[in-house]
Image 1 (cartoon, rainbow, N blue to C red):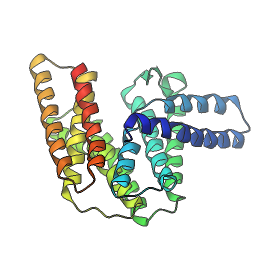
Image 2 (cartoon, rainbow, N blue to C red; image 1 turned 180 degrees about the vertical axis):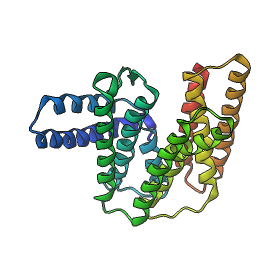
Image 3 (cartoon, rainbow, N blue to C red; image 1 turned 60 degrees about the vertical axis):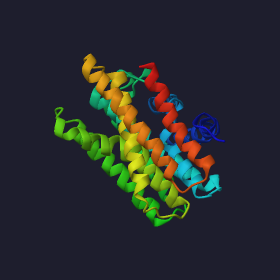
Image 4 (cartoon, rainbow, N blue to C red; image 1 turned 180 degrees about the horizontal axis):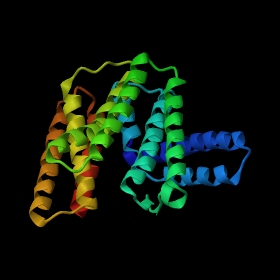
Length: 271
């Protein structure tokens, strides 16, 4: 059975090799100036971190249909992770964060202008991975939607915090971006159109729990609110487990989906 850990061991060398080759091409275009070469290495350093949740979810979705051609799936997995890299670089500018994945954030090491441009390059590489692969048109449409909706979610998140925006921001920035769309994309590459509402509900629950966990780690509030958020995470993960049991897929694939729930439950115990 493939866990997210063994998936990462398989995926990382392929993804980092692909990204290294693309960045080498950009350096050659520039004449190998150190002003381009040095930041390109920082992109690689940033790319080495990360849990690979989004490509793993897409992989699980495709696997659940019986799809076995992992080579055909790779451009989608690369595209998802490259878009995530773009989002992280730009998010650090917006939040003025000095660290990312235990190293200097891109704009802290270079400049905001350079960070914007290198983030844009990652977005361009993500689109290239998707548009040059022989994917169904539905895959390209879904990928466009997830990029657009994630950016809209970030726009709303950049507004002064408002309670009425909270659920929408979580829906766009985390639930759809991290779980719902990677699931739909994995199915689309496998040639399956999903209409089962259980997958949408599952993605939403996992996304909400995922975001709440991040908030609990990054911005712990007063004890009462903290405990309420933990209770909500437990409730959402419990319902997610129930939904996984209802999915019309093999038991071994249900266990893989449950491994995502287990990861979040494990994280919750450390907070």
